[in-house]
Length: 390
Image (tube, rainbow, N blue to C red):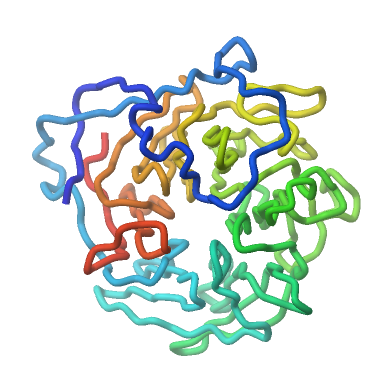
């Protein structure tokens, strides 16, 4: 266990922290964008923060906090993807098509019965999982998974119901979302408006991200029954924003500002992973622009990493409206402060991290070392509770 603790601030540039990952973005098969030559990241170009990361290191811990920096809640998870809570019970989706329930220290792996089989390939599989707001009474949940139909790789959103030690599909809510081996999106979250938001990737067809008639490379907004909200920015369409490559994490500030993490291009150039503030109907530029590049009608990120790749995944907002971000290539938990545009490493040493959640003031993360791109140990993957973060 190599978790670091914090009390003083050491500033290091992001390209030092993840230089070994440069050119190793989480989607190695994606082609580089057809865009203008690489621009040097500067604040003057787009108002984004210079790609800098700080790492905080503590020398002492307050006596009223737990002494163990990391607690292990579950081990030997199989490519876990999302953390969900129902009271003290934890649920985790696994990419191969299971849901793991952890209750009173006991782990049970529960099967999911779907009308269309999970296609567990590349970055696709059983991904997003979100308990219904009325789960306590209905035992229902939402899920996002990859499947194959007529030779095509696709994704769908379905409603599930827990029945004892298994889950069954109630009905599909949205099908036919373009999919591929990589760039499948898959994150789901409730917005402050109590509607369902879903991220989709460009399915390795970059031009689809700019096509408002396609569901690929988008953030979608749905009624909880699967309908199209009447106030969506494009009438009759699920599309809430477009021009995305592979958005992975969603969170809102107390004031309702929506922030999304997104993977930048692979290959050369690489890196330029993003944090975007999402506006209804906004065009976020992929594949025409990335990083500090600008084009009329396209919204630049509020932060990007520059050349190094960290591959941001799940994200959550802390009580101070700072964004915690689990990263894959970055192999660390980052914290982004929208007020200062400072990005800090607050935890590392456990390899790839897929998701992060906060419950009762405690930070939970899942590792993702068994996904084919990590270096798993004998007990990977694991659900961890992080204590004494800076």
